[in-house]
Image (cartoon, rainbow over all chains, first blue to last red; front, side, top):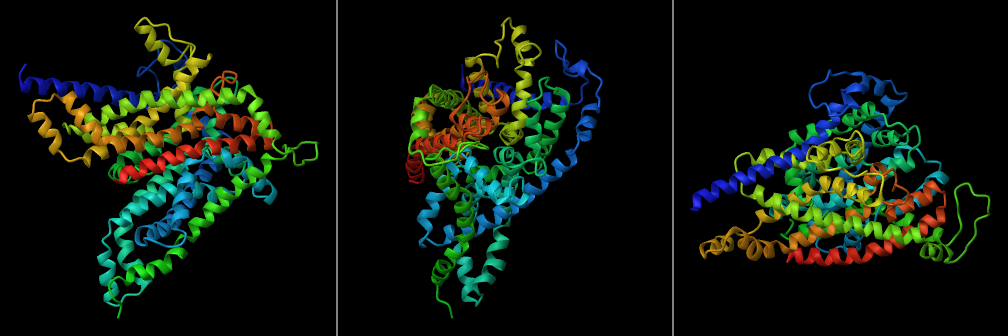
Length: 279
Length: 296
């Protein structure tokens, strides 16, 4: 077997594996969406109906008819947006210190703290947080949830932003200082424009994590601050699993993400590759 | 007016102020509750209990160690972690190596392959649960096509553990793939080419050249995956309805949830939480070492 035959065989094998992997990656997504537009009869049938069924909007109508569903969707969007903005702001400031100042007093403790926040399972803090929020009267409170969402994602966002800020040459800041620019002017007019793409990537990530967050709201949100993942999880307590509406609710959670992934894949991958190493 | 190097000085002054908001969040949302958990763990608080709460020393810890469910939950956690790593690491590394060949269409495949890791775990868990259904699930139907009688996935301990491992792997393999891919991109091509010229085949090049060079990256990936396996919550909550059947897939995290929010034993759950922190600390220490080697 000569070299080029082996190359062709190798490429063919690679494509077979990639196609198999792509099928595995996409099938559950396809199955969720197709189940969400099937009638009950088409859902509970063997062999399964992959494409030969009459699509229906019934499941989505049932979801939107659920009392409070609009509120739940809006809650999820509001908490996601607000906590993401807070998290990215706080993390960018901290990341600037970590990237530019090799030694300040709380540097070491902060590094240790960030790793601990990332490493310790959040379930550990949930019981005391439940007690604390109940005592303070902020159980089921949007703003308490926003603070918690932001906090759990701070380590990831700080590591991501630190690596982005480190890529900005410090000489740019130095020459601006030589030209007489003040500290805040440098941050605003020199640093900020250069790290905006990094901030965008970080924002997308943190927003994804916040959108998907389940542990915090399932324990600390009641009926008024309930989010989409908590709503979806409610389907498992029903004795008869209602697969159609459940798939519709799931689709409403994951479709925005799938679309975002395709649209923002460049940023996502650069962010994942540089930041995920640490977080 | 300002000399070179003054940037560092003025930043040092600013630095403490800039990290202050991050400190506030970490202390308020993490440090304070962990101290709270430590305090609660030495008392006998319950939610809505009738017994006046008081200090009871280490009784909650003694109760945990005496409880077979505690040890079972630790075994389950370890099994899920180990099986997950055994499944995920080879597949993730293999996919990264294939993407690294940069064949036509690689970017499209890369985009498709990262989708699972970004999707809402709760929704993912529910959908897989439907696919695992013993009678109407598409997985057992597919198995029946090749003459295999699929197990009652969520009805017995080991099939249920495998079901969780499969879904966790589905979501985690893309992460491993991406990190290894980034690691591969950072490797110099020279040694691999030299080995090929010297007559090594692709498998030998991988085993003796690429894999050792990737060592630090793989180590960091391993640490992150271990930490995330210990944290796994959403998938188990959904796929096996909080650790079922019975307590078959009840991890330590799930046991804390069930103790604190199922049985309202606040102090018991807090003691379990403190034990979990103590178990995570060695992993944290390994991570720091791995990160140091990764930088070197």
